Image 1 (cartoon, helix red, strand yellow):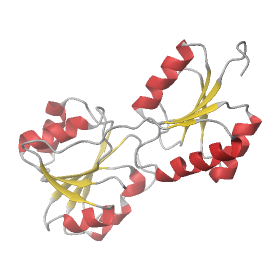
Image 2 (spheres, helix red, strand yellow):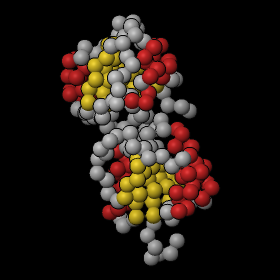
Image 3 (cartoon, rainbow, N blue to C red):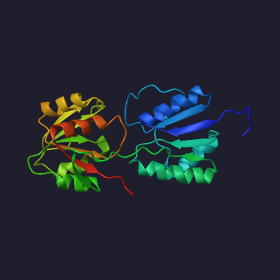
Image 4 (tube, rainbow, N blue to C red):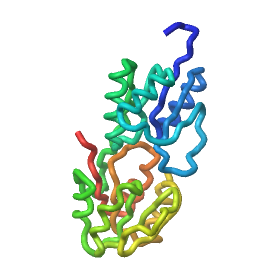
Amino acid sequence: MPADRRETILILGGTAEAAAIARRLVAAGADVVTSLAGRTSNPAPLPGRIRIGGFGGAEGLARYIAENGITRVIDATHPFANRISQNARLACAAAGIPLERPERPAWEKQPGDDWIEVESLDEAAAALPAGARVFLALGRQHLAVFESRPDCHFVVRMVDPPEKPLGFAGYDLILGKPSVNPEEEADLFRAHRVTHLVCRNSGGEAGYGKILAARSMGLPVVMVRRAT
């Protein structure tokens, strides 16, 4: 690349790491586009340009790369966003440009943690005992599998209100983002008489408050492992 030409970098975002990378690259003078899936109606402000919505698979992403002069892609999506990561690998290989995938370390079980580790959301739903009051720390697109457990009461936190009632027999809905403060998360668990936490091992600091809260309260955590 000529020395006088700015890089045009596409960040596949939606995470705290993606926002930090965008800030750093824009400050360094790069032309940055951050792509968001659009699941949150009012995303936090980001430096550089923002695009919202899907690309139409690997072919659509490759076309976007070519049409917009993208010189590098950084896949900073959620660790469980396997489909977009696979599309990014295929698209960048087709376009012949570099792809970076910053790896967010997974959480590791610590003394005092009571984890029930499972391989899938289906296994997570099956692991819950009858009568449990379950805090689901999952995106709204991952809730349907738990509708098969009418013998449990669910506490669901979302950033945006759902367009229609959820399909649970019994549930409490909380609007807001996770707190990094474990005491605030513990207060929330106590207020809703939570007995179990279900989450995916996404790693990172932003969501670790709930893990610390569960540890301090002795709550079982049904933890979905990452795919290997």
